[in-house]
Length: 76
Image (cartoon, rainbow, N blue to C red; front, side, top):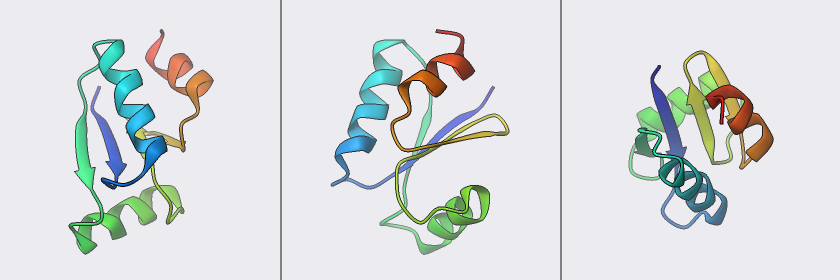
């Protein structure tokens, strides 16, 4: 299952999501939406959100640092 974290370097909640995934040894791709307008548009299209973090877990989208939802989708 592919996991993608859309984030920015200055976002504290993005850092929390990445720390959570790393702590549980979950591999993920990080996309810095502040560096790519095209990828920011991709994130908005997938999630309907302009804010970060947005985590795509397969077809599921998690907005913000929603720890219970992340645990549920990742079976942690």
